[in-house]
Image (cartoon, rainbow, N blue to C red):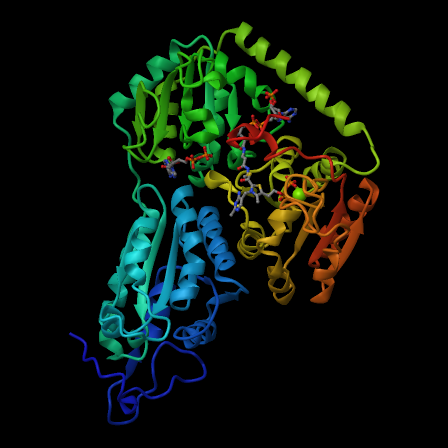
Length: 597
Ligand code: OXT
Ligand code: ADP
Ligand code: MG
């Protein structure tokens, strides 16, 4: 057992050497000591964590300093929610839990939305928050930033832990890492009370208390009979379809997933963040025939995708059902790590439970060489539909209206992404999201990061910072003007760290569109509109980045090309027709009272 001293007796815990080395210097008499600060840092480093996204303040200011001194990358944000989104998407990109570090109560709450969003999206993330004195919090005596954070976090994440003693830090961090990345990934809360950090421990005992997590996300091999059942169903299909979700992108089983699609010859549909798992230009992509393939398919294999609202719960008219809740007659195979996911909305005839890498390789092994391709009439019907839609889209994209609209602006983005397939694309908004998804082709896996399962606005700049930091590649953020407002202050962060982020605001002066008026004729504007002619580009200039106002596709193209070539933080205010959008983009029908436009 390590000897732990009272933090109120500083003589026992001499100051940290400026080098930031993990231990506190020892004098000739006393044994070498360490403390809670260093044990947290050492435990993270031991487990391969190299970056912390956070915002300093009591009681974690010193932790951020010491972490940086110890060689961790500490990316400091202007608001914890953005740091949290950054951590969560770093988790999605790397399969390592993204770390967000916040101060107590308000900072913690600011980070909590991102933690809940991570859990909802199955992104591995750990929100580490400092907290106030337990004794005072529990007696509700009014401590500085008093809050029972653990209790509040619990229902919003996969697991929540609190560490009270320095010698338990190793276990606390190991448990948090395992909980975040094993099984279905998700958000984990780790509560570190202020008193923990200065607790002194003999260095040797401290070192021994740390745990390097072995095999944090163990492979989960699917049962052979489950694989066989799925293959039998697929073999008998006349109109099979593969649906790839962001779980498939997360799994990093890219080559096997591609092999499965290509060897079976089955058409596939990528969910938004699965775009690029196979290039969107792949001849088997049915993305441009979505509304045809969903109701027409007879057997659908879901790989890392849930039958939630984004897939109309697997039933209703989208799937060919007669009424809004009627089953369309499809049989479903669901490949997922969560055994509870099957049957959540409609019957799953063949669940295959395991990690996607293991499941897809077992499916590939079961397929063997002699697999018959799907019937030609199915493939032909899809190709016909797809070609028609693609031709229609090409026609629309070729137009050059004045003022610029979503299509003419996104035609430029489409070209830039094609020329820079390694660039990361971040995307949020309503119309700005939906048009980008269908117009801008992706060519490589995990390059498209967006609003995900909740359709949440505010991920933009946090995701952009993380995408740049983690990948080192240029980042293109296509933002609605409303969406951008949720995290806009982080352009300072982008400039401070000199990140190669090119933000393009598709500026239509409002939420969905900018031409609404106050029906009373009163002085207040409509709740949906913003200041007309806003100069968003000046925000970036304020912090030393490049700001450009673009009113034509040619201006937009030049600005984006310059941004990619120079890697300088850039914000392009792409002014578009304020009447171009529709309410909620393509999900108008979800508004309880809005009429479909
Ligand atoms: O088959 P059909 O004919 O149907 O055609 C489809 C495809 O086949 C075809 N397609 C193609 N054609 C040709 N070529 C190619 N390559 C091609 N690819 C596809 O195109 C169509 C469409 O294809 P798609 O997209 O695949 O299909 P579909 O039917 O749209 O898919 C259904 C869905 C549900 C899967 C899809 O629509 C989807 O993923 N939707 C996500 C929607 C979403 O999440 N939206 C964000 C939330 S909206 C709202 O909530 C907003 N808020 C409120 C708010 C939020 N969200 N968060 C917080 C914290 N606070 C408040 C706010 C405030 S949005 C918003 C701001 C909005 O204003 P902005 O200024 O930011 O944005 P603007 O609207 O731009 O002004
Ligand atoms: P989308 O929004 O793209 O449809 P969802 O977030 O709804 O995707 O679904 C992702 C699914 O992927 C979740 O059900 C999750 O359990 C699953 N998943 C995530 N990672 C893995 C993995 N490594 N192996 C298997 N399934 C996974
Ligand atoms: Mg807008």
